[in-house]
Length: 620
Ligand code: GTP
Ligand code: SPV
Ligand code: MN
Image (cartoon, rainbow, N blue to C red; front, side, top):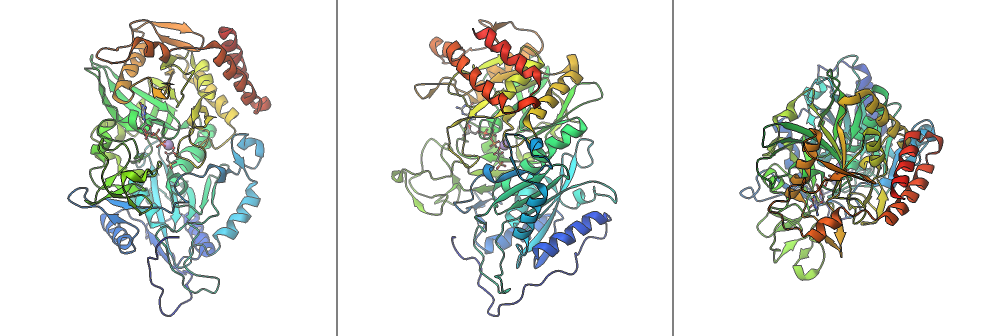
């Protein structure tokens, strides 16, 4: 563990257990109060802090963390009210092998999730959480996912001993007393307990020293879908600790969606306006660190198109009164990947992080600003790297961690659509699935119909990124970009999508597949970023039946001349490669899909078997 941030009191004292919850007067929900009391009794914090979401609160917490050396303020002239934070090198990404779905029955978690018996898990958690907040402040963090009081919105309360998590939650959600007021006497909310697992007292109750980034080598990210509870232990980083995000909005959310007839998805939401002035809304699922933030902030390179951002990571979708599928972004901020983000690739993100931003695990410049690989063409001569060490380019190491991130309010995004504020969401015209695939998957293909689209989503694979612990670059199945985020049996999830298609009928969005990452000799064939507007243009025109498509084995690809390539410097050879369908390689993939589907036994919807057989036939 790195540097010490507090001197022990000369007289070690027994850390007290709270006897008074100090709840604000307006809190009337008895279940909420008794739940908080039970967590206080279990974790034994020294202080309790109800987060009101005010500016004063932000000021007090940031000053406290500056004094402890946790937040490093950046030069206010360069990046006002912004901070650098360095995590423990062992706590830098989501821990998928420590993530559990604790449904009563193992089959309900399914073969793609880690499962624990809920009673046994809870026993183990109680042992871990007992006294885990001693000597610390427990923050009560009420938050709303979606606009306050909106019909699609949900409220949660995270109890945490991490003030860093509090600051992030403040940016990522509508956090504070306004959200707490949404929980009336009989209203539901999702309880989420989080501890970094580093109490400031030893077994004798004597105070111990804090560290800059407290965490615990034992980590558990656990979900109880049937009782809608979240318990997270041992990590302070990203999706492990900001429980509104993956834990609530996706894992618990997806199960709520199954029960209540809606969808919680790992999707960006983008509004596009054509040169003719027609507005389209698209939702796109890409695995972690595969381009959602970038596509959500796209600057079209083809004339006349306008792109506006609604969400970059999560979408909640449900049929509206007119029978179409409507989406909201439940979040209020971006927790975006820093490396690769620069003026050349994502100028909108660069403009968004002008200030009020928390940067985690990036490098510090001599001027007191931040830097990461890909931010500027020119590499600084000297930096302090993400571990806090002197760094020069000759070092040959990465100055920023590959999963370093920025946390920033969505309202700072210059391309934010005013529709982000809409309670009822936006009607979705097209759903896009994308992954990081060096081979096989064409630049763009349209699904033949909803069922085929569900098959495309279900059979997605992608090269693993640094967003989670594991081997980067390894190709793995990531159905619907939800492999780490589906809170129940993936086969039932596919069934839910198929049912949704039936419900939506001819009002269902069209489904597409894209791949910006096809390579030849290690080099990307497609320029990506702003030029992805060319693909979106084709997709929108297909939605309105304005351009022709050619049927191939895997779907419908642009007919000759229908993809706008004007002013683009991609050779005919590369364009051909981008759409190449190698039957043998595809048949190999079909065989792998066969074994993948077999893992789900008789829970696999038979429509997917039909689709697989259809694909095989078209390929041979
Ligand atoms: P999560 O926040 O982890 O869910 O990720 P995300 O899907 O929002 O990923 P993001 O947009 O941050 O992209 C991650 C990486 O992909 C960055 O390093 C980008 O530079 C790179 N990237 C995004 N779009 C493109 C593209 O069109 N082409 C290429 N080659 N790289 C891209
Ligand atoms: C992802 O990994 O998909 C993220 C980052 O969006 S985290 O919030 O850490 O899950
Ligand atoms: Mn994500």
